[in-house]
Image (cartoon, rainbow, N blue to C red; front, side, top):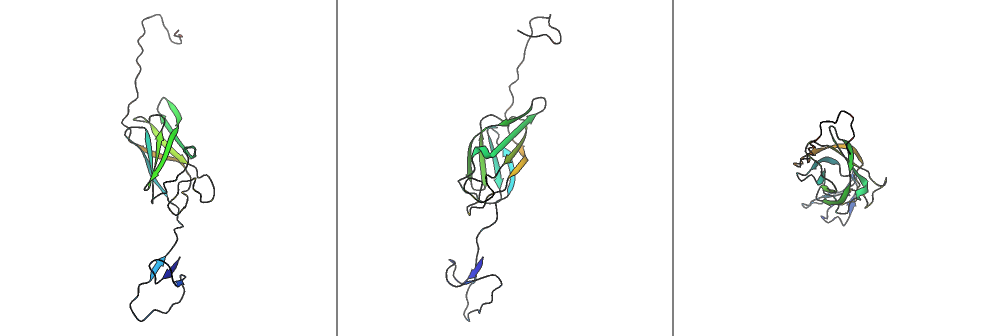
Length: 170
């Protein structure tokens, strides 16, 4: 970070806390800095189609983003247990990462998302801002489920009354 009288950042630079003599004529002093702050995770939501999940961050992200293998989406539904949803594609635009899902998330599913930064340093294989600062890893963050998709119900009608509890259907 530094200060300069040139709006483009060139010319004589002054470090924070440095002394400088101001010119007698009116001049503008410009602050110049390098973005060193990582984007922070804000929230996630499942689309009404149930086939994509968006992750929102605090700032504009690089279009080059993390591989699908860096994300984990879990869903659970009462009586059906918990499973992991496979991610078929990842894209980033503005402050949003969009995960395309290989299976549908349904109404009533409880959903969480995790993301694992691939390295300790800043690199292009991560969710990062345009300055190259990597977003930190997140674990089991709650996702707003806006899916309008309903599970298909299977109705089984038995033609025999000779079945009892524990019988095997063949």
